[in-house]
Image (cartoon, rainbow, N blue to C red; front, side, top):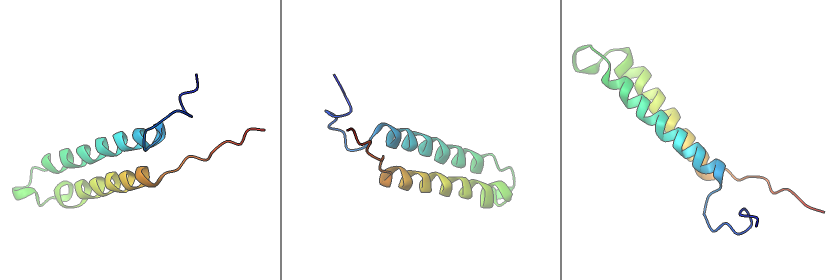
Length: 75
């Protein structure tokens, strides 16, 4: 029984893996922003590093949505 041919899911296994990693990166970015100890979070971690990590996570999420695996041709 080949599950890949009878798969009714919209995305493939790699897509879901990329999505989970992207969500984890986004959460790490928000955690970085909360760790900033300067007043109102205006330090490097709250203004620069955290939002940059969150943006990378969202870019990975967009990549996960548009990623298409190449079909292997069988003779």
